[in-house]
Length: 235
Image (cartoon, rainbow, N blue to C red; front, side):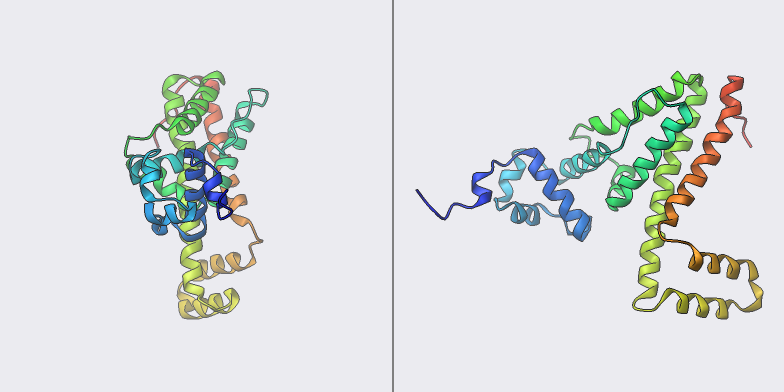
């Protein structure tokens, strides 16, 4: 028996192994670093072996995004509608922050080659939870978009803000950078200076608190319309 057989040789190549390796690579190095050749190298196989399970890179990234969506909690019906949606949205935010590349893939056009059962299950769960809570079809339509836009929009803003701040710091301390920024602004922008100071004072994980604050405004704002059985009026 050949004693040089590697672990890669002994473990069958499956779709799940491919997706796990691709997600790990994207998490560690960014989605831009992902290629079929890099992925094949990480798996210890030839690139053509991957195509047997996923026909092209478009189907690969679609499947990666869908697997990430499968990590989102979809609470049972025991909770009230606001608490259930709050838990689901908070879970989605946490999951998408953990996989910083995934939000952009969700928003990008799909290749349509790969099935997206987890994404569809999430969408149907959110719509169903709204309908079971007494939302009309039209109001559920509006509420779904408000919640989903907050989940994806806030998460992408937070990721972009964090990346931009990391680039701006480039070895400088936050306090020193903000002090310089406030000095440059001078007396002409006092409210912006105040805002910058609050950024410095914010505790670790402040993004979660801000996410919850915005989500709470959305859910509480939907309740009167739900109770009245009519769509939220345009502003």
